[in-house]
Image 1: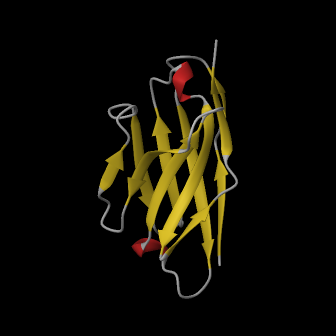
Image 2: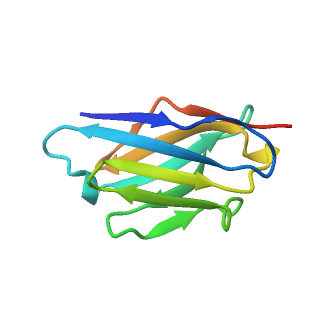
Length: 117
C-alpha cells in the first residue's frame, strides 16, 4: 500500500512563498522513482484541480493558473515530492493534496494553504 504525508501548509500573506512536501511510504512492488507524483488543490465550492505533476523522467506539467509561480520537484532518495509556491495570491487558497499514480491513484490527507493579509 501507499501512505502519503503532506506538510508545509499554513497562512501566508499575498506575495509570499510556501514550500509543500509530501513523503511517500510504499510497500514492495511500488518503486517511488517510477511513479508519477502530483499536487492537486480544492478550494471551497470548487472542483479539485491539478496544480502540477512530475513523472519518472522528471517531466513536469503545470496548471495554467500557477505557471511561472510554482515549481514541482522530487527527491527519489527521500521518496518526497515538493511544491515550491511563490507570488501567492488569495486565489491560491485551498486544500492541497499530494497524489501518487502507479496503476492506481493514491491520495494524501491534504494540507491547508491560506493566502490572506
